[in-house]
Amino acid sequence: MADWSKGDYAQTALRLEPAARDLVEAAEVGAGNRVLDVGAGDGNVALRAAHAGADVTALDLTPKLVEEGRVRTAGQPVRWLVGDAQELPFEDGAFDVALSNFAVIFAPDQDRAAAELQRVARRVAITAWTPESFFSRFGRAMGVQGGFGRAMGAEGDEPDPTTWGQADVLRRRLGAEVRIEPRNLTWTFAGADELIAYAQTNPVFAAAPPQATDALGAFAEREAGQPDGTLRVVLDYVRVLA
Picture 1 (cartoon, rainbow, N blue to C red):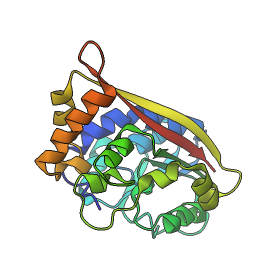
Picture 2 (picture 1 turned 90 degrees about the vertical axis):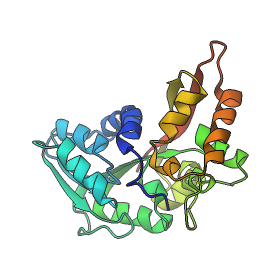
Picture 3 (picture 1 turned 90 degrees about the horizontal axis):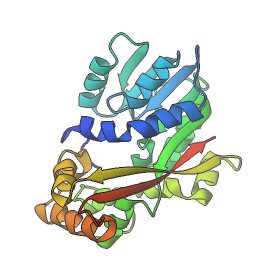
Picture 4 (picture 1 turned 30 degrees about the vertical axis):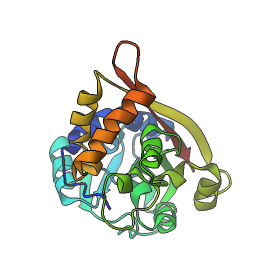
């Protein structure tokens, strides 16, 4: 799996913040709700849910990110824990809603992680990359079916996070009545050099060999290049409510 303590996750969190805000609003988080943020990173979702008046528990597997999240959410009703999405340390039905913004999708045992979300919360809301999202396509261009973490040199048997972006898989994991809503983020870069500089701060890319980041620049120029020389990287994802 990727080592999320590497790089500078805050740079990625900043770019993912619009999706976090959208997720909390779609889940209709409100005052008094008991909210669990799974794979909380440095607190994008937790902070937004706290601002909505919720009592928030934020859980992440990476101690470094938990500490960064504690600092970022200081003064807010957010409790931070180090923990595993595949074995949530809570009683059945402990929360009104469990949220996860591009996080639980990286759990090695994906079915178990989905079951855990449903066990501890009455409602579940997550975001997940689709197979056609920019980095998913880059992974395939690198000769790796599925998870771009493997394309970037991640160690171990990295699962394919894009299975969470497939309707049939989501219905099997989260129920037939799950709501699946296509969304996207668009990241604009001045050129390939700026994209590569960002990628080197991303924990998934931080340990990648040099040839991988070079390949990323060439792929982006081909797939996302604009007439003015900028790159328009479109990240397709789904917002899932269950």
